[in-house]
Image 1 (cartoon, rainbow over the protein chains, first blue to last red):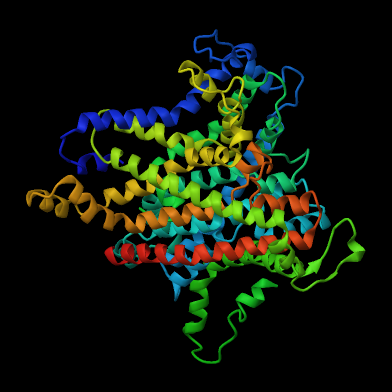
Image 2 (spheres, rainbow over the protein chains, first blue to last red):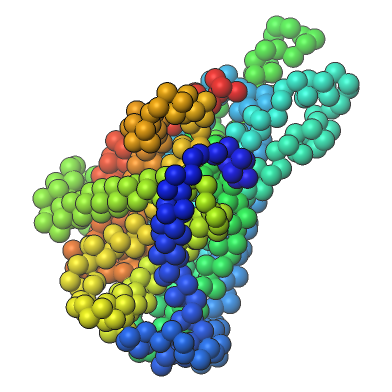
Length: 283
Length: 313
């Protein structure tokens, strides 16, 4: 995004005032998160006051509680399940999407745009469209409460996005370079490793991060298809839906810890985030 | 099974051209890398939907499996005439339209602000993106317990300072409470798309307009808005596709109560708690029909942006 800074050389009339407005807007939008972070470091008694206690003493009790110190269920199994489901499905997406993107960009099949749009149209089919048959199928094949079922479903959820993004990244590799390498006698694996990979790698990395985020966030499939064994982090969070006396610091700690991987992945993929979310339509 | 329907002929032995590989074989070699992804998608997304379609024509409660029988359009009739279900159709529309419009307008304002150069723009951009990067369930919990709580929530805490009222946000304005949390999460999404649109404007054209003495407002109305139109459309349509399907916020903030149950929540409840498989499927098919209507427009917008990119390259 550094190129933007260079490109916008707008006039500065009223610039300072509007800059201040932008800062205010940024702070207002960030305030709930900042407040969540602060509350997570307060004691439960200080977290539940009106007016709010901004300067109360800081403590790690909320985090200790969340990690099961107070006798509650440990979040670790859910966190590990989420990590397995997100990482494994992202890897499976890469294995399936990379060859497909290759056949849609570098050596395109006939009518490749139609194929690309087929992938996109599957993304527009809502989750509830297939939820019940998938549930019945899982029940009859003993796949309920099995993390690998989520891996398969998350792969299908992210594959269209990945194919679209990868297609656009691979299309950026100049055909002339590939042809030149071929004329020099390089074989396909060499071309892929030495010519295509260096150019497409940043895009592939961003795609993986975006797939990871969507899998980590998913609730509906996980809620319906998992139970005690394969429960994911968002399902663990739904345990906090009903109030349990004084528990604000614990909720804040839990929400923050479970959101951390997404925040990290999101900021790492910031530049390509729009492209992924708009399914490659916006660059 | 799907492989045979999509790829009917797997490179038949061709009698012609014995030395060089036949064109048909070569076409299949080109196609081969595509097939695993295609077959996977058809098997995991299209087949279940076909099953949903079939089940939607049956009267089938999973607690009484023996009473299952073909029911024609009865389930659809029930979905459309049952007061609670009809209300959830209406709630879905209301929720989607309100959230998309509000976040689109806010996103546009923020994008315009961020398109200017000012001190700390990178930091402000990061602050603004953050809400989108909170796990949706966590964001919903944050609004439900930490902001909306009538006794010690931050909103009433801040109102307390100015001597304002102390409303119980979720029970007094349940749908608005869900909408506000979604607008907070989706405004950054709209902002990012519109910012990309703003930054793809023709800088020379803007410069020329300025040299000719056009005011900021004239430039905005006559150059920026027409250019942004398709980005606005894209944001609205993608936002609709995601928000029509929203489950997390409704499930977490109100558990579908107080008249906030949208169709995805209703489908979930109908089969997961009421075990009415046929009815749930019919409601699911209705969600799909709604999505297809939106998606047809969305695909058109995406394809026009896409063709522009391809022709530019």
